[in-house]
Every structure is written in structure tokens, then in C-alpha cells.
Length: 274
Image 1 (cartoon, rainbow, N blue to C red):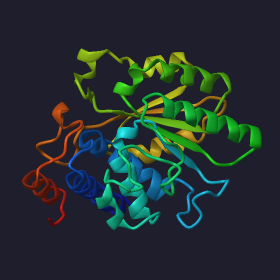
Image 2: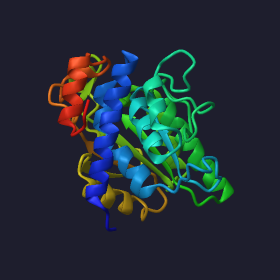
Image 3: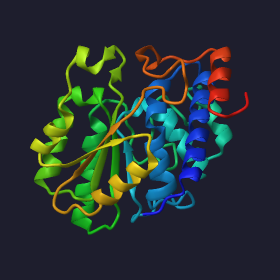
Image 4: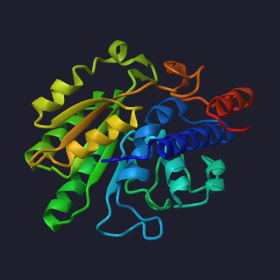
């Protein structure tokens, strides 16, 4: 598959700038894991998924579930840039009366397929969607994005077992493997590795890629679509806080907002104007 790498990199930079602007305006939020996931979301929404902002509930659409719901600013940014709602709405993040809550809400935000926030529940819902597709004979695919710290939740493995049992080959899950969570390194909090071997043991097809390389993301998604009879995992190695020098690989930026000076620096580093 041929991709327009320049276009995707431009969109990813816009998404990252949107993430910083949102969280700074809100005074709270989760920048680190939103920035690490930005390239995956950008690829899915601007190169891969069959979705239509003018008809967000179309039955045969592809579906996306943000299982790591605290990375909502990344999802909101791609939805706004895709045209589901005005980009200006992003600055209402977490404000009283805004549809853009701290975690995705499918009842109020066009383009959101599942309300998420309690870790482990998103991938479980994605499994249900994929099973429904099999029952209905739908041609739509289901994509989900998990955090690596999220894998510490037992519910994830119940979902993984069910997806394999039912042969859900229209389900592709990404793990945003940045190695950090709110309390520090995954390996210090609760070891999650070897992630690839664990999912293979549960009956999944597994690929490991650089989650910031659009060529690798594209190739992995294309390969996943050829897999029959089993769900697919794309284990994406990423950098928490990707694109912002003082946030990269810093667990402290998991869940705090930048000051105005920090936000200005971040936006400028990402190629924008404050």
C-alpha cells in the first residue's frame, strides 16, 4: 500500500499541537500517552478506516475503541481534524457543559464508538463489536488501542481469550508500548513483558513495529487484514510524550497540564505558532 507520508506527518503534527492546546486550556489531562499514540490514530483515521464524519453512525463503517480512554485528547484531535466537529471545540476540553469530557463519551461526541476510561473495558467492548460483525456478516473492521500499563488489568486477558475463541479476524488491537505509566516504569510497577508471547499464547497473530513510523504502521495494518481465523495484535514501540523534548520518556507527564510557557515551547517544537 502506498501512503502519503508527508501528509500523515503533517496531520500528526497538527494532532499533537491540538493535544497540547487542549490540555493547557483545560488545566488538566494526559499529554504523555496522548502524544505517544498520535501517529497510530492519525494513520487509522486519515489513511485506513472507512468512516464518514457526515454519517458517523453508518452501519458498515469501521469502528475504533480507545481502550486507554485517558488519551482522549488524541482521539478528540483526530476527530476534529477529520471534520466530526469544529477544531475550536477542542479548547472546551473538561470544561463544565462541554461534550469533550476527560474520557470519551459515545452519547455526546460524534465519531466516538465506545465510552471508555475504566481500563480493560474498551478492548472487551471491541471484542463484542467484532463478534457482532461476525453474526451480522458486516464488512466493517474493528480497531482498538490499549496502553501497556492497561495490560495489568485481568479483564484484558479475558477479552483476549474470547477474541481468539471466536476467531475474530476482523479485530485488530494496537498496544501503545511506551514503557511508562502513571507510577513509573511498567517493569517497576507490574511487569507486562513479554507482551508478544502472551498474546500469541492466547491465540493472536502478533507483529512488533515502531509506532512512530508510518510505513511500518501501514505495512502492519495491511498484513493484519490478511490474517484469517484469529485476532491481530500490533505491538507498537512508542515514546511517551513524543515530539515534545521535555515530555519525552518522562512518566511525570502522564497526567498533568503544561504551563503557558511550557505549552508555548511544546507547540513551537511541533512546528506551530503559539
